Length: 547
Ligand SMILES: [Zn+2]
Image 1 (spheres, protein in one colour):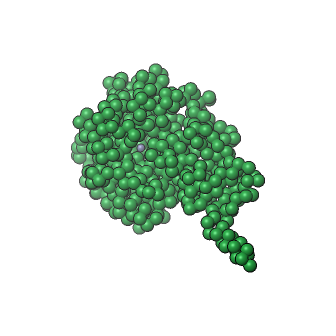
Image 2 (cartoon, helix red, strand yellow):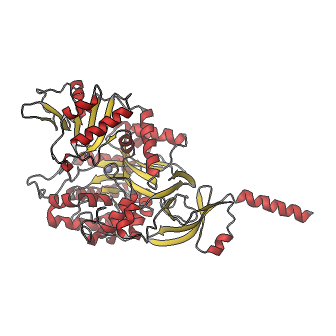
Image 3 (cartoon, rainbow, N blue to C red):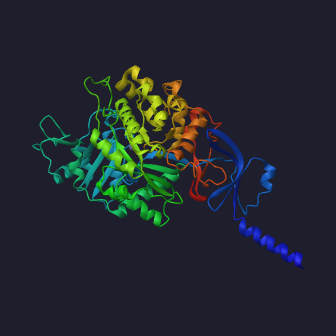
């Protein structure tokens, strides 16, 4: 009798302490300090990995009470995007999508379809048009929108965010007519007779932004939720939000309080929002469960290459006399960096041109010494064009190169025009950076590029577009291996966020952040890496997406 009781207790004890889940029948992979580990079963409990199984007979001994049949799918660590813009992505998903629209008329038709579905909206927003890919190769006209928009106000951002196409209703609302002068730093495009055509460039766009209905905190939570749900579907389990305003901080905190973050967020405070000053004074916002961490700031040192805003040492090859724009002067850079470092924040600086990268490295070299903050793992966001002599300085100074592989494949032709052959030696130079000992983190810069991390993995491995161009890859000496590329989007992105002991690897003790995907990333043909499909996404053992 006593034996029977003891036995029952043992069984009860067993089931109570092993609420673990086993996922089996998988091709499992994780990177661990650059080494690939393979497994066929993954066990987790209370949101954390407890065991990896590599042998079928050992799986039989698993005490897990819940079993999931992976049906032969590939299992990878949840992917991490080290540079994206979450609320912008959510806004883009809540607006007319004009990316890839082949003509002015097609763009107008997409707006008309959106209006038909959202008849209660007074303002119709959109983004993504690009006249360069249209047969006309010309800026569109407000009259094309007037035909379909009725009494709605329509404002459509160009793909690069530097021009806006509006209808006549918007021009009336902001009181722009043939006599309105161009604002400082902006331009109102006009027809030969002086008529404003509905295209506003750079600071002229602010006239419209100023009269748009303000975004409420509730709207912001909606944008973020919409974005995160979408991102989970791409297999992303953590995203670094590259520059957020105080309203976004509030929205994230509210979502976190209500346990409504499906994906982890590591956010950088935008130093340009004065409302962020209070957060900067109080110091980093650390979450013991690493769902919402705000311990970095974002500063922009220069513009972008496409618009010739990236700051270069020498003239643009395709525009003599033009060397780009430095967006912060010495005093501002010193102030922003000092304030952030003194409060214990990681400093992440957008630097695209070779001048911007060198200057930012100079500043890090001084300031890291002054504040003794090498451990904060400061980052250059983009790290696109680097003088060969500056490449080794990332590792020396201890600065992370945060890179976006799809930028290289999208920019390849344009970058050659802007920079000429010689300067390409240090352009998107991931392999040289890795070989120099620098830490790299992978991202996409969505919504500028697609957030699909398999596009990034493909670009890093092949240096080719999805059209397999150019043959052999663009600057093929900078290709990375599949292992290196997966590390970029997992363990290295985690390192760049001080989370390498929590996420980015599937090892006992790590969070059970993983994805099931259709194709085996390591055996699929190189040119097909981007075609992979995510079947399910898990964050801390909880399923947040299923196909
Ligand atoms: Zn960005």
